[in-house]
Each structure stands twice: as structure tokens, then as C-alpha cells.
Length: 194
Image (cartoon, rainbow, N blue to C red; front, side, top):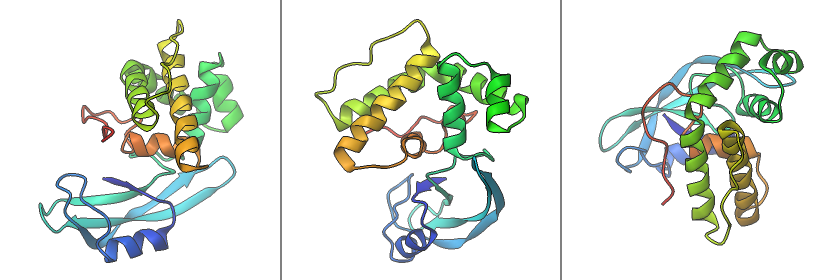
């Protein structure tokens, strides 16, 4: 799995020209077909996509190229999941959030549970990234809620990244810095800042 931009033509061009590096060994990725068709649920519409697959020229591992507006193994766009996380950090319960987003309550409850399980690690991860992008940025002031701290740290990272690189969707950045594994049930570490 490798996080890429959302423009399929640009991703294809980068892949064909060897500009995408393997997340495992760094060698050039090469085209290797497509993954199965997926539905990605945004707030206003459902999009059907076939993500590009690639194979590494060095280690021979294969990787699905996941656009930064999605997460691994999730049907909903990262912006939808992010909206649920922010709403919960602001005090809304999973049923109210599910109703507002038009999603099943069990799905939203699952997102919140998984994020809560990783909240401390995510807060630390987002804070490290924010510091790497802007070392002069002060720390995120802790609150009584680790969940809220993790959401706040994601917001701080978004602000720092916009100042440095210009506008971009904040939850897409979260997808990038977590390698698409924001809510993944895995012990694979998140990508670290260089």
C-alpha cells in the first residue's frame, strides 16, 4: 500500500516514468494492473474507483496506490471519517454523528472506538510531524481527553502544513502521514517524518 495524489492521470504518469518509490526499499515502482473496483462514500456522493497496483523493481513487492482522500480498508472518504472524529471530540455521540453523516451508527461507533484505541499514539505521531514541519511551533496543550488531544494534534499539523506547503484538505494530510492507516487494525508503524 502506498499513498498517492488524487489525480489518476498524474499518478499513472508518475508510475510509468518511475517517479514513485517503493515504500519498503525506495526503488522505482512499475505499473502492475489495477485493484478491484471500490465504492468510496463521500458526504455528497459515491464514487467508484479502481486503484492502481504497482510492483517494485527492486524488492518485487506489490503495492496498491491509494489516493490520499481515502484510507486503507475503509469505504468512506477520510473527510467523512474526519468530520465524525471532530464532532465526537466536540461532544457529539456516535448516534447523532451517524445521523448527521447519513452512515450506520455501528460504522461510526467503530471509527470512534478504533481512533480512541490509538489516540495517544496518533497524538504523538501528529505532534512529531508538526514539529518536523515547523520546529518553532509550540506543543499541543493537553486536555482531559486523549481523543480530543489527538484530533487537536491533527488540526495543528494541518495548520503547520498549510503554512509551509499551501492549501490542501486537512484530512488528506492525515491520510498521507498515517500511510492510509489512520484506523487500521495493525501494528505496522506509521510513516515517520524525515
